[in-house]
Structures are given as C-alpha cells and as structure tokens.
Image (cartoon, rainbow, N blue to C red; front, top):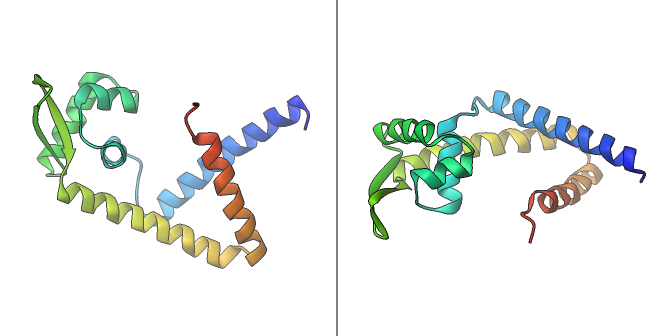
Length: 143
C-alpha cells in the first residue's frame, strides 16, 4: 500500500471509529461524560490520586477535582489518604460506581451485539473479529 493510501486509510478508520462510538452511545442511551470516562480509568487501572487521574484523562487538576467531587457526592468513588503520601488522597471506585459502569457497558455491548446479529453475515463476523484484533494492536502502547 502506498503512503498516501495509508494516510487515507488512517482517516477512514478515524472517522469510522468515531461514527461507530457515537452511534452506539446514542442507540444505547449512554453518553460520553467526564464522569463515566473517569470511572472507566479507575476500573481499568485501580485507585490513584487526582493528579494522576487528571494526567490519564488529559485534563487539568482543577477539572479532575470537580469531577471526583461529583462522583463522590453520587457515591461512585471514595477517597482515602494515600499511604505513600499523606498529603495526597487516593480515589477508588466504589461498589455503586462499579455497578453504574457495568450497566453502561452492558447497554453498549448489547447494542453492538444487536447490530452485529442484524447486519452482518457469518463471514463478516469473522472479518470483524480479525479487525478487532488489529485495532487492539494499533491501540496498544508502544514497548
């Protein structure tokens, strides 16, 4: 594949993935939010301080403090003193936060499964399976 074809493929992939994510969120009744994305980070990576959370989400420390305060008032996270630095507090996902995140993920997964069943042939399902493995490789951090 030529260089300009790779650039075009990259743009098509970016656009398709974005359209797909938006369609699934709309169709499942879930929305992208700073709160749900923060819950997702905590679920994937475990407890961390606000500064690390802000860095992981590429937002300011002040913005993340507000998000964490909202999540804490909703009962979705808890905070406790960081054992390695008493001046800092570690944010953890609560059981209620885990449940809320699971409901959101289940809604999206169900929507995707419905779309796959209704729109794809068995051969296309196999192709999609292979494509997900390739996309996962593209998304993996560099060694």
